[in-house]
Image 1 (tube, one colour):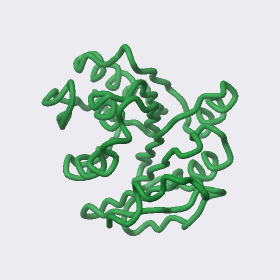
Image 2 (image 1 turned 120 degrees about the vertical axis):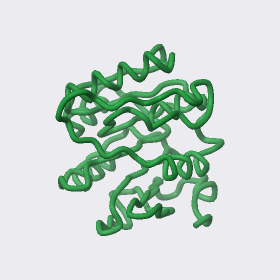
Image 3 (image 1 turned 90 degrees about the vertical axis):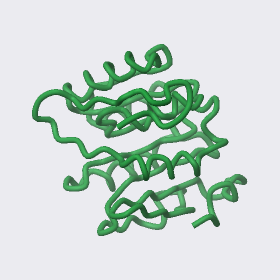
Length: 196
């Protein structure tokens, strides 16, 4: 895996050492994701949940995000994220947390943290994505016109809405599906929907 574009373009993303199981987003899907987000990355605040290697948040930083926060419950994954941030020269705009995602969302809400884009790369084989989506929808950590992007397998069908967040786009890359959600009533839906 490598950073595709931006200030850290071409830098290698390393896997964590040891037995931790990580299923990284393919370069094809990652490039598709950031092509869709294109003009929304510059100066955004990005939250990478179930971060694994940190490659999605690192790509956002490389392309101009002002801040990226990473959350993973595995200490080896978190150590790998710090290594990858260091090797790409992006650690000064990052925060990394060892935490269960649901607890992390609650903690961010208490601190009044707010993000423009939240990406969830939850494990395909563990039923944690739906609870995380529900927790996010009930919190105030996604800015008014912000996006939630959930990665999942095509065998897993997500709801059309979580609280006030409506699905505005769905894109498939092989077995991987990216579902985009934005708060109902947002005046920026046209920037994401309609480009299937």
